[in-house]
Length: 88
Image (cartoon, rainbow, N blue to C red; front, side, top):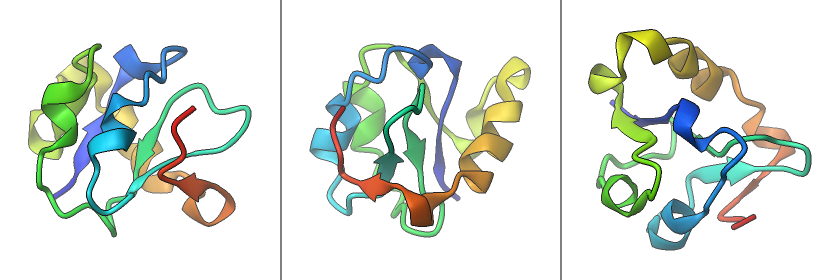
């Protein structure tokens, strides 16, 4: 299981989660409107969740129903064309 960044991150992209991630699995690139967690790299440590000032990070099974589209967005993000650990 992975963590998912939801709608409260859109247009905010605070980056506190990036600073605490021990495996640099949170990605972004110029032009993005939110941060993304790579499900292949996330070790489920939960370090990102409590530091998010927007409460935008959820365990995949706990993503609110009205934000389930963010699960797909996180899984389908082009991680190969972005950079991990980049705090906007």
